[in-house]
Length: 284
Ligand SMILES: Cc1cc2nc3c(=O)[nH]c(=O)nc-3n(C[C@H](O)[C@H](O)[C@H](O)COP(=O)(O)O)c2cc1C
Image: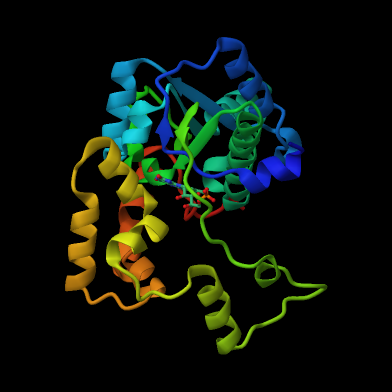
């Protein structure tokens, strides 16, 4: 397969074989991460490898009992690391204040994800599967304590990797032309937007269990692996909440808008606990 085919075949994998990844493969994955593009080539990235069985279980519990984190032979915790850069700057008679500069933060989060996605693609080409687990962002304080992560370092993403036991069937995406704009942004009409998402999701009016297979594969897969009744719970909640379409499913049930906004306070607190504050008065 060429790279295009590999990318078109990639799916998030949540069902892994109990098979370790050889050290030389892991080293290649880490080389790929380290060789990724980075704004100014500053490389404010650190990666914590989790492989020990007990530690895999602890990490899985930390991120809301996602069983694939426990079952994957390797998880990489991708951190935005300003600690190393700050110390290097200080040792060389200058100052780096990325923790107060939104511009540094935005570029550096992109750096982190460039590194992570390089791992995803190389892993895929080597017959491995992977899944991002972003929920660590809600547990940053706990993760920083558990992994002895110092000030100015934020654990922002997990990538769990392993040899796939099964790969989800193709999931639906928007048509490429929906996300592409030529020369300038082309605003779509309401009808076009409805049509674009309809094409992606199809009819909502199918059996709830089938719907979840398509729209909430995490719940279905978690039930297969740990039988906690997520699917039943989700079907029940959807009925109670009278979810009528895909948008309501996403923004009333999965990511309730008011809760997402409420989470700001906790996230900002976690940032502060790690020494980040973008609202300080700039020195003149
Ligand atoms: C930033 C980010 C965070 C994600 N977090 C999770 C997660 O916490 N748990 C999970 O099972 N999948 C997670 N995923 C995987 C998405 O659910 C998956 O990419 C999406 O359903 C599209 O499927 P695909 O990767 O097969 O295209 C995450 C993906 C991204 C990019």
